[in-house]
Image (cartoon, rainbow, N blue to C red):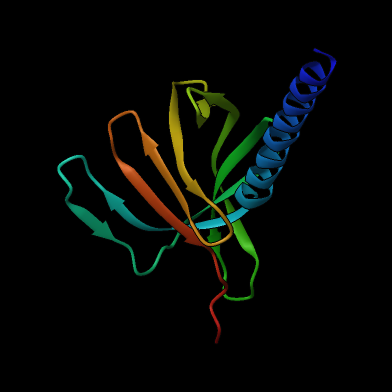
Length: 139
């Protein structure tokens, strides 16, 4: 009985540590500049983006953050647009969801994939957005 209790406690503790590590990995991966690569519509049609004048900047601290649109300049700096969205990151039904709220509306996106090489989000309309990390133009 004592050994079973020890195993149960260890399992719960390890599970909690794993969830914290996964959330930390998500925070680390999400923070930064992301460039849209492809959009897939619900009818499976796709739109490819070879060049983007505006990219998304995510900054996540804990479970809250901001997403804003920025325009890269040739000197490596950015012009920040007026588009800033506050969001909350929540785990729901074994998925990570980003809940946005502005003065006009609110919506959510599900994180399908996130790592250092790609970010894939799906919105309520079934539109899938595939991002790649932004890299400065090499002139």
